[in-house]
Every structure is written in structure tokens, then in C-alpha cells.
Amino acid sequence: MLGLLRRIENPQRLPEFHFVDSSGIKRTLADFSGKTVLINLWATWCPPCRQEMPSLDRLHARLGGDDFQVLAISTDLNGISVVQEFYRTAGIVSLEAYMDQDGETENTLKVPGLPTTLLVDKKGNAIAVRVGPAEWDSEEMERVIAAMRKQQSGAEKQ
View 1 (cartoon, rainbow, N blue to C red):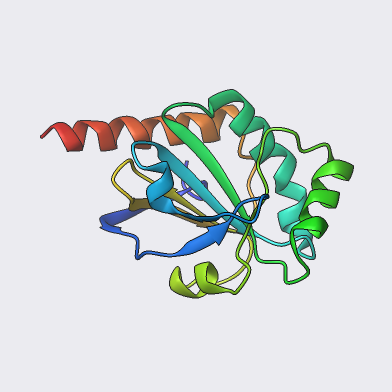
View 2 (cartoon, rainbow, N blue to C red):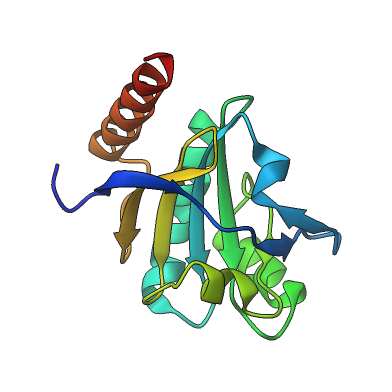
């Protein structure tokens, strides 16, 4: 299971950052408190990012709900319409389009490259990270995510 998601040994609360949804409304991670969140930073000009988006869409379709959310945050500079067009042509139907319009999210999270994905617990702590693409809806990846969520829930009860 190594190489799927790297566990962060001492989870720390993520610093505050904002991004916008497809309606242009400013959002923060706090808007999703109480949920485990998979934050994926990507761009339409990034071939590995484009490659993994359908699997992120399927993951969100299967697991998304009251306690799990995939936030695919684009770092594209050309606006939300570029992302929406990519979603349309790639058949992305479950993910909402989010934008890091001013680079704040990418800078605040110190993203080393695209795509970068963080698994964030219900309290806003980053518990795992992956730099590079993945098959997010594979059985193995779903097991890893479920195990990390379960372990984190157990740690919260202690």
C-alpha cells in the first residue's frame, strides 16, 4: 500500500486558505467541517492531473456524502470556464469545480507539484498526502482511505 497515500506522522491543522466554487462564492475548508475531505490540487494543462480526474469523479460519486467530500481545486489562471469545459468533455459529473483563483491555496499548502492530494480529517488536520496521479477509485485506494479514516476516528475517541 506504500505509494498510494503517505501517512503524515504528526497530523497538523491546515492553515486557513480560501478558494471559490463554480458560482464564484468564496469557500474555506471550514465549510466542510465534520467531513473527511480529499483535497486535490490540479490544472487542466497538467496531463497527469487530467488523467486522474475521472477516477476522482468516480470516487466522489461512490463515497461522497455527509461524511466525505472530494475537493478538486484547479490552479488554472484562465477561470472557471476552462475547468467546466474540461469537466464536460471528460464526462466529470460528480465533482464540483473549485478554483484557486489567486494562487493562495497552492502557496499556503506549499504544493510541491501537480497533482497534489491531501486527505484531511474531520477536524481539518492533514493526515496523508500524495504527490502525483493515482487511480483514486481503485479498490486498494478506497481501502487505504477507509483505513486512514477509521484509524483517525479511533484516535479522536481516545
